[in-house]
Image 1 (cartoon, rainbow, N blue to C red):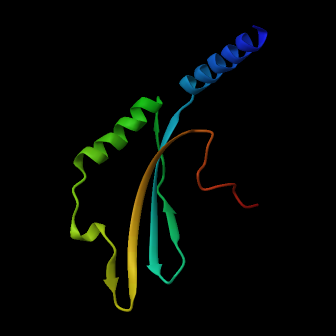
Image 2: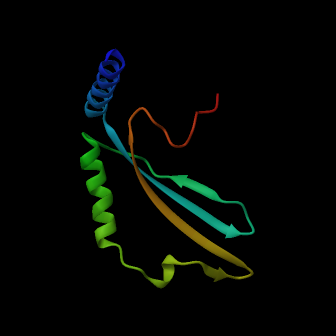
Length: 102
């Protein structure tokens, strides 16, 4: 019984902590020119007051996305080029770029 109560308290605390934090909308662009290594660019994040508000932005992108010839792997000279765009909603305590170098 004590374990169950402890687990519920931890879940309640986590839900409260998530509700109070700011959510960041990150856009990741991954560029790959085969056989060159992958190059990742992170766009400056935008802040939203809740995860739901942040996810709504991604849902709008998905709703308006239309396939086109430029959204596939294309041939550029002797190499192939691919651009992959990912969008993320993360708490403001998480930086997907990793730790900063000193």
